[in-house]
Image (cartoon, rainbow, N blue to C red; front, top):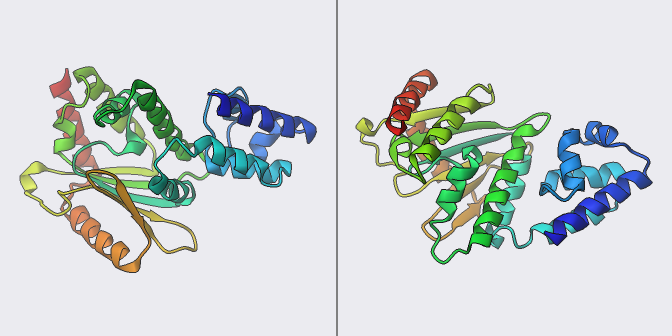
Length: 263
């Protein structure tokens, strides 16, 4: 991707002009040196937060952020770009998913299978979308990553996405991320008969010093809102769902039990 190379070259040139090593820039921005190296080589897509921190650290006067905007303008739908900024800055994310594993917890192969379901999508568009989704997960590599509180319907664990191998790897991924004290997953058993939220998933983003913002999914696209009435309605649904969800240890047991199906 030419735009990736342009951004990487500009970052490296700005860093060398400032006589800053990759190790020093990593300390200044709180991102890993290895990630900065990948980006300078044009092998990874930077997040807006990384572009802004590098811009500030190197005195680029907005040039790196401008290049990031140019780089990502086609990577995500216009309506979704506002949510990406919320994700970048949030200290806590609360999510409900009745149908699939949340994007921030998906493996690459699971994400690819989900994205391929979009009618008319090309292979190139699939790969671009998969890359963008994986890059979003870099928020968990921040010095202070956000808290993620995910509530999932049990059916998510049994719905075949891709292949049995894809499902095995995805459930293993869930168990792996649960080792982090900043990530929690609770399952609502199908036997609970819950219908609240069954028509679609949502995410609540909580930012320091700002009102909450919600991302509400729909069949065609999504809707990002910070309107008090929307936020209140989503909070009410989330509280109801959370009240019906099993504690995390019992939820882990359900994930392990579901994993046996995909052997």
